Image (cartoon, rainbow, N blue to C red; front, side, top):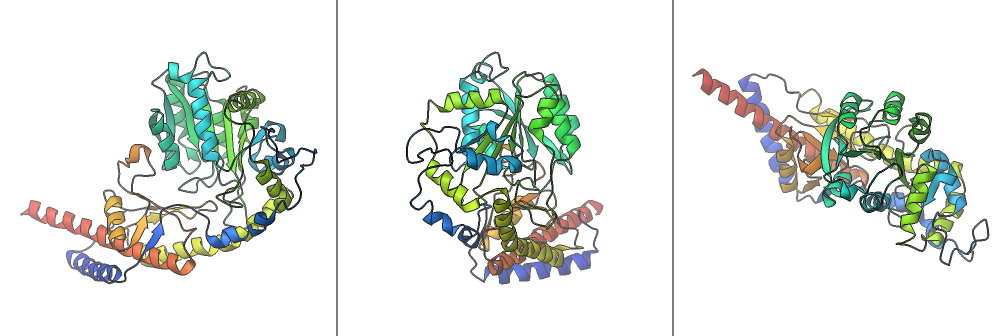
Length: 432
């Protein structure tokens, strides 16, 4: 990534970076780029939800949403999201507001009850493991740590996880019970899985008969361009390949409507759906159907979701464009960084020279710019290269975001030129 510079040139660049950092630290900034939360302006787009459902309390089939029951969720809401999540409405559950909660429950139920296709509970087969494409989503990794599930990193490519590695590992090790996947505009690097990757995931041979793909389609409708990316239908591909029970599909309206009052979805084969319903019936008498009804009334249909996401796009696109513009102006041509240009989702991945990410994050924090901890994109917080930094542009206002990215670029130049200087001086000492 770095380029060779003369000693004089490097000395000048480092001195300028130090001056710029002193100026940055003296500004008294307090900026936060840690999590991909919707901005208040995005939440305002769904303000009408707060006045719904008004005086209405029955769903399309006459169900009184004020009462118990309806564990599968309102049929009309499942119809709205079925196409977006690529799950037939009859195989889709509408639940509470958190897809992470559904993933948590699926892990708990798999540990404590027998999955379709399994011979025994996962807890009786421990230790078990999950494949974790990296860089990836820290909350997936936190769930594995919570339940003592070993994590095996798998490199990401431009088409998804490195399938040669995945296929080899799952074929030889029956302890590998699953893989985490964010297949569209993945967190944090924005990769969209190719059709070939989806087909290979669906058809690959696995040593574990109860292997599951945790398909976290969190950004299914979250485009950042006027040309939305489409991905292949995993659930259908698994059925066609003779592995109908392999996929657990998760989704949510939380970054579509309200993060604190969205609706989460689970889709799978009929056998998997009945397995989850049977387990969930012991912990719940039904989801918040009032919230589901107001989502039906607010969004109306799949076209309503698309129109709403176009309004979200109008708010988010300028922020991602600002990140790209500033990084290019401040770091382009320096050899100190590369970054992603995602077509959707909520994140930009910044890669700095090996051994620099933690120091960049530390210097940024001292200057009042808080970033996701370096290493969070890897299992156990261990980025062996210490090179990946996740940027979350969504929440700050545009002016604050520009300040934060400009400050981050200063920190990258400072840490990067310090590292280069140490190497040059070390080389000179060796020569002497």
